Length: 289
Image 1 (cartoon, one colour):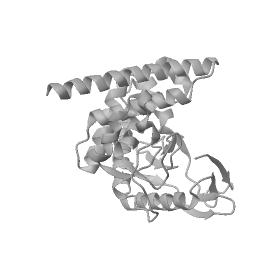
Image 2: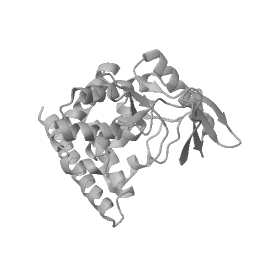
Image 3: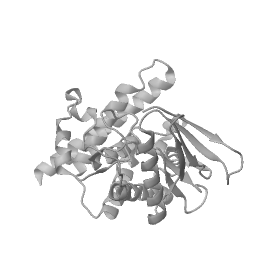
Image 4: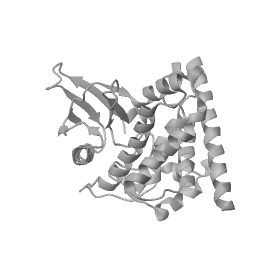
């Protein structure tokens, strides 16, 4: 689902955010409206208020957000300076888990939907037979479909109490699904975890990145989800889904021969190896228990 963005207007009180949506415009507007209402009712996060959708021009118009920073930028910065021990970073990861659990519990759409798995979950080349079992294991919900660092923004990032903002709840790299479909919650969970291990932040943080914090930050995120949802997650399913999505990223991106792509590609492969190691450790632990 391709999209383009623009911001119109200099007055922050009147400026709007415009997105060109090439598929499922009315469904995306309905979903954005639902997420905005959840943000007001839960007070967990911020969301842009959708104002209108223009079918003739395929435009989704929302109220402009306050100034923000990318979630991945904060991860790289805190990790660089504090070796992953920033209390603010820990709180934000826990909050990100809580927000996702609230979205899964509270998104309601009138649009008819299917319960499906993305195409990658049926891709034998990625050894993904496990994922056909996720729908029966549950839980199943309306998903964000792209719950990663690029769609989690940080507002008031220079204060002691920054807020997270959720945007763009629509499938991007995952194929075979539509915005109104339901699926296993592990798809969204795995999407976020894959970002932690794939270093989804600016490349200039790579030389000083502390790899020993990725599992601890992932655990904090999962703790936040479990706390809000009131359930115990299958950790192997969470990390195995993250590995599947990480492998998809590796196949889709970082195939160019320029230096930046080569460096990033090497980091991605390192992240995949670490995710694979985590999955193996969890699997052995569960078999031994």
